[in-house]
Image (cartoon, rainbow, N blue to C red):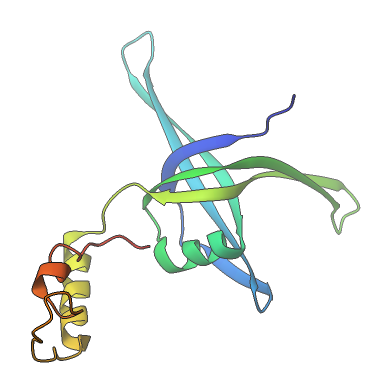
Length: 153
């Protein structure tokens, strides 16, 4: 039995760069920083930051393009992949990256961004139709209450 699984929680180093190989095949590349804190024998606090190269394909790449931004705290799940190529100088080069299967945002958007998005949504909201006698109509306030959330999906 074999297993190649990586789970990381960290902060994005930059906004994902997304390219389209074909019109429907997106690939996103970005870096993720994970940090570890420890104390030395002398009592000094030390931080170690590890940088990871992340690659996401197709729908995961489109999610990254639309919702991720520099500094966000995210959970990444995927697998390790090492690629090999010959450089222009004739030397063989290697790179190890995480191919992301899942990306989850672990913190809410800032309050200011949420307020701006709410105001824009209210301005663009279609005018309500007059209430019909049917209590199950789409415009019924009983059905629409509590449905507004800030989830990106």
